[in-house]
Length: 70
Image (cartoon, rainbow, N blue to C red; front, side, top):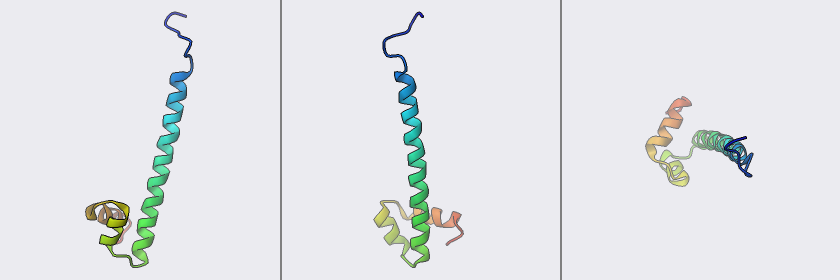
């Protein structure tokens, strides 16, 4: 075929690896969100959660607000 190189499948492999990495990031975000909620329910102050996660107070409050915790 015209335009084919010896690197057949390299692009597809890279895309597959990207999809795997994206799925891992989504799962990690879910775990962080669940942990933020659990720590707040356990009484950890919002500023401490923000400091320990490297997120802003607004980020943490948004997560908690979506979960119904204000």
